[in-house]
Image (tube, rainbow, N blue to C red; front, side, top):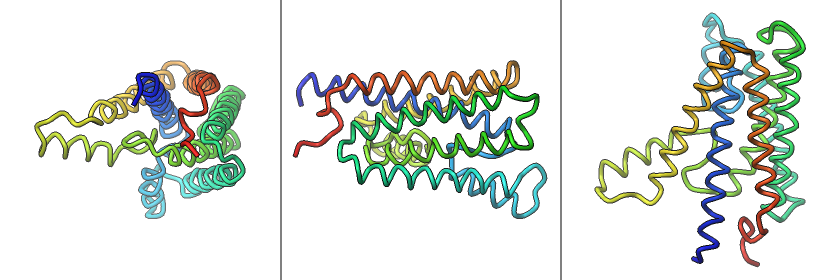
Length: 230
């Protein structure tokens, strides 16, 4: 592998790590501000849906189903785009552009009223963020970068613990695994602090800005970075 290829691969990892921060920001807003529902972590939503179905206080079946449904719609839409766009680079660019728009729209909706935890604002924001996350997850899945899914950390943590426990050598993916965990944590902390002390608009605006920068970075990359040779 050439030095140029290694640099580009490192750049891709940085972009995916930044998107993981965005997942933490968005889920902090959605879980803490929109009533115990995730818009990025669908594994968590299945558990939350179980709580809501059992009648646990503070959980909503409708809100959770809205997030799950729009996430699936976004993933399906990205799947259709992938069939029409053979270039992974172009597909990723488009996904990042769409995520920027939908996250910015959610930030705008958050600023339109005093309470985002109920009514049309709540469900509109859940729908916008869930749809955006569905698109992103579908495309990141196609990129198939090991240990960097940007939203789910269960297998990342499993790999980090397993390899360190049974192999005294440094695993080649240990750094990216740790970065993924820390970036999600940082995003969640920052999102929670901003939501508590400012409002929901700021963390979502930051999320939109991060994704927009990632889209610009993608636009400057050569196609060979993501597209396999013919």
